[in-house]
Amino acid sequence: MKYPSISKDKIEENYGRAKEIYSLYGVNTDNVLNTIKNIPLSMHCWQGDDVTGFEKGKEGLTGGGILATGNFPGKARTPEELRMDMEKAMSLIPGKHRINLHAVYAETGDREVTRDQLKPEHFKNWIDWAKKNKIGLDFNPTIFSHPLADSGYTLASRDRNIRSFWIRHAEACREIAFTIGKELDSPCINNLWIPDGSKDMPADRLTPRKILKDSLDEIYEKQYDSRYLLDSVESKLFGIGSEAYVVGSHEFYLGYVFTKGLILCLDSGHFHPTESIADKISSVLIYSKELLLHLSRGLRWDSDHVVTLNDQIFSIAQEVKHCNAFNRIHFALDFFDASINRITAWVTGSRAALKAILSVLLEPTHLLIQAEEEGNLGDRLALLEEFKTLPMGSVWDKFCIESGVPAGSEWLNNVEEYTENVLLKREK
Image (cartoon, rainbow, N blue to C red; front, side):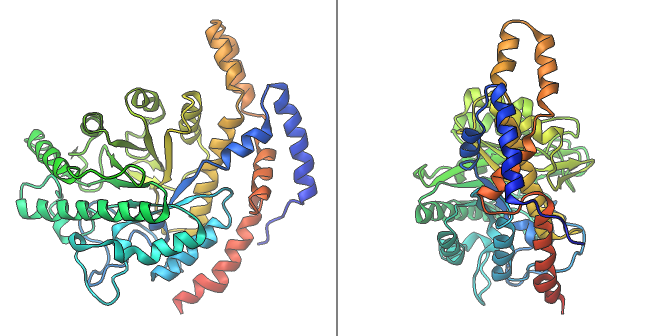
């Protein structure tokens, strides 16, 4: 099926009308477009190969609470294929963005290198690629999908040998992330997440958390220049194999980042299905200079569906706007769906997140604040509803053509062509 394209003349015409309407509410759409062009998303590499990575001597996923489902054809099998797929995705996403790497995407040649022995040199091709494309990179230790994660415990393990291995891995990842940041002259966020927890009710919740704190203290003992490395930690409510108890809970990491000066990562899929991270943003920003947001879509017991422009993602972006905090927030994507075209997933999720951000940048927030300060809560509610139907779509199309990417659904034609010419041929 071929999807229609919108002519540039029609987009300009529609934008002119939208610009006039927004100006009635005191919003300058040209200024908004300049603003959103400087708000990057960190697009996650693991959507492209179902969180498999390129480790030598490892077949498929093992312990650690990570699972990608589906078998859509064309999965990236090599670093070169993955980078090619990400370039295609980025060519269909407006704005200038970053790439988020996991440690298992190291390139070690024919050698099998254990995770605790990874070096910056194993990511040289990624760094060179990022330089060529003029993008930044972020990083993550891979503390899952490994035999030493089979017990369900890593940094919180009572086994000193297991714990020491993962501490060494996390330390190695900090050095890699620092080198990436220095090479690219852009701060690299090194985000730590562990799956540690219990499938059923534990008798002792305290001891694993004490062990985790000691492990983290050891990992973050070395100081790095924050111009090149930013450390963050990510919580979760429950996961596969840790349904009853997660050691690294929200409360645990909240206390830790405030005492250690790290960045907290809030993942929108890591909390109760009815709990939004939007309400947490203002509280964290009172005590922390920066905040990392992983944009995902929780659905029942799974936390990592493709982002869509739903109420949750809009409320997250809206809270950032209402806190006047776009310069303090790092946006990243975190989902993996192997049941659909992986490039479609990347582009859909990225464009949805950017639409949410654009929508709130266009929101006449000053009128909401004025109504609230005057105690006119009826007007505040009414305005919130009226603003939902302002012509954001016309401004979005303008953003797309100014970024050199297709507006509307036309981008799906590009993905279909790429699928036929590239992805499907990988299966042959």
